Length: 242
Image (cartoon, rainbow, N blue to C red; front, side, top):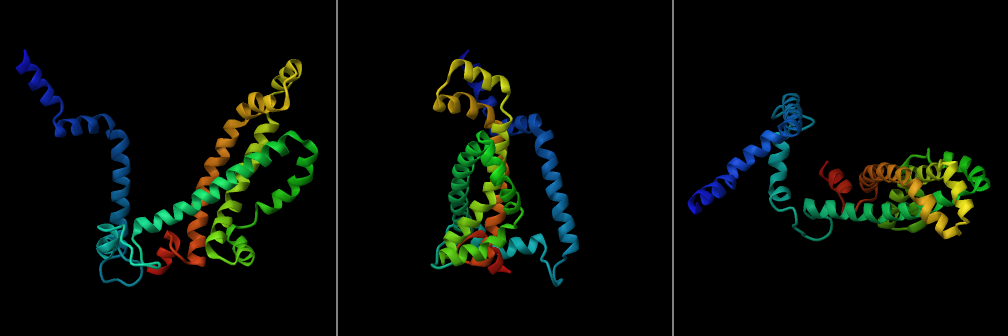
């Protein structure tokens, strides 16, 4: 009895069998991305053979970045000479600060504008114009205002991410079903309870849609901004490598 249980336990916990069983269950999800990446790498290598001028192939990229960026991504020689992991961490830190500020301001303003029709009609034309301005167009203004590269890059992230969050939150508040509003009036809910029980739950799907769009735009903006302002970050790392 014990020997049979031990054999069953050792068989079920064989790493190769566990890996094979997992791959069989998930091959329809794992295999297509692997095939797509391999196809992309092969086409890239064929278009950029060794010794050709211009864009290097994937094999050359791996060879050039293997030491020290891949095998030692945390090295720090001072200044901007840092490992790939530290460069990415610096960019993620800026994104976290800028996106958090945009989420706080965007959700707060969106709720305030959504519940007040007069304020919405007053600021909507202005917001519709400002949101069409390209993110990098704000960079000279932020550099003139802050006089430093790091706050300027954070401001670019903030101004890029705030518009989808603000607009989606406003739309979510405005689309609260009238039945919910009527129930709030019948129950005579106080202002804070109305926001907590009615406004926030009803607008959460719209808010998260804005947050999802905003975080994607934030990452795009920080890479482009860091290419221009310099310093430690994945954007300047790419530009400096070029």
